[in-house]
Amino acid sequence: SLTPEFVALLIGITVYTGAFIAEIVRAGIQSVQHGQVEAARSLGLRPGLV
Image (cartoon, rainbow, N blue to C red):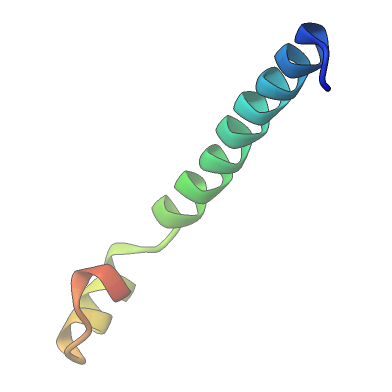
């Protein structure tokens, strides 16, 4: 069985890593230029695929 300290450590690391990965994904999405989004939309791509 897991000790409460270890469970707290796992939760902390999971939350920290999740926030770190979310920031990387957010930056990647924001780095797409507006012209590239318009070009993809003009080709018929749905907003979820752009």
